[in-house]
Structure formats: structure tokens, C-alpha cells
Image (cartoon, rainbow, N blue to C red; front, side, top):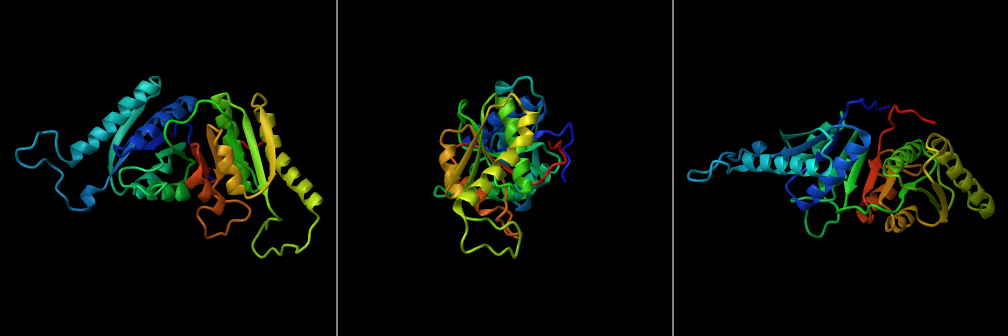
Length: 299
């Protein structure tokens, strides 16, 4: 289990893009909610390429790649200060490629916040490759931001009864409490789901009995957290349909969607399950992905 240090910061990755500044604004609010410091990080890959980092002869003193990277960080720190002036903010240019730098940062982070894509993203890609890789492998929850999120609407969480899903539900309750928002717990199913490798699913099953079993899975996954957060209004949504499609549809009215990185049906070798991967690419709201079970207080 992962233990989150009480002084662990919220970390946000920046690269000078508009998407990164959107992420900074969200990260500043998340740090304020949690009463944690905010750490702004820019991964500076150019030293690894052997490219010159200082200004060319005759250029202004503040030119050059290193100065540009420092400007990205300074701009992000200033923006965070406007959004949440009570939050202590630090910024650093860290030498290295973005994915390994952010994965290393996630080891000591309460939360990593990323824009959905940055300067390196191709126009045809909905999600940048760094965002996908960090979401799949981070040691902390990852919040992926698409533009300025809406201030209204519920927090939506996908539930499937797995251990990681239970952790995602806890994270969602925490976020709903921070935001003074209602929670919608969604459990979508099409047919019996294998619980472990080698499970043999029945060819014929009682649909009503299965629906009752799935309803019980949803209720049990939420019950303990509801007791812990009695002030968070909760609505259960049991839907027969594709989990990914249902969550994407629910995201249209949500201010945040929360999923576990993988659930009951995930193969051990997959870093992101098919549902979390699909929602990452198509959600209409910011998406939080919870990968590791933290050593937090479980209900």
C-alpha cells in the first residue's frame, strides 16, 4: 500500500501550453482544498539532447532554452497565486524527460495534476502521450484536466466492486466533500464479470438475479464511505450498458469523474484497464485516475 505523507504536495506539470495553465488553476484549488503546498514542475529535456542552452551571441540575456523553461515555471507559479493566494507555491525546472520526471514526482505527491495535452501533442490526439503514461504508472492519484472545469454538477465515480474501485470511491467522496458537491456512484454492467483469472462465466444466467447481485455490489461499495461522509448527498446509478460509454455520458454533466486505473475485468499486464483508458480519452469533464491503494483510513 502507498502511504501519503501529511506534508506531501499537490504536483502540477507545466510546459508553457494553455492546457498546462488550465491544470495549474485546478491544481491550486486542489491544494487549497487539501491544505497542502503546490509544487510546479517543468521537465527540461534539452540537456539530454546536447543542445546549447544559453542565448546565441547577440541575443537578449534572458533568451535561451533554460530561461524559457524558467519563464514557464514563473508564469505558472504566478497564476497559482492568483487562484489560491493562501497556498504555498514552489516551482522547479527539473532536468529529464517529462514522463520519468513526473513519475518520480508522484512518489512523494498527494496528487499529480496534468493538462490533457501540451506543446508536444499532435492536433489529432485527444490525450497527450505523457498524460497517458503518467496516468497509467503514477504512484499517486492523477487528475487530468480538460479546459476550465465547470463549478456545478456532481462528482461521478465508477464502481465495480474491486479493491481499487473502493479506493476510487473514497477519493470521490473526499473530492465531493471538498467541493460541496453531490456524488453519483455509477455501476454499469452487461453480463457477469470475471473476478479473477481463469474464471469460467456461465453461458446462461438469471438476469433478475444478476441485476440484484450488481445492485448489492454498488450498495456495498458505497455504504462505508457514506457513513464517513454523511454530508455528501449520494445517488446510485445502476445501468445495464457498457461501463465506458455510461461514464462518458455521465461526464457531460459532471464537474469531476473518478475511476480506478483498472477493475475486476482487467488483465494483470494492463497498466490502464479498458474502461479507464476509454474514459481518459473521451470524458467531457476532468478525470481522476486512482491506481494504487493508499494506506488511508478505509471505512
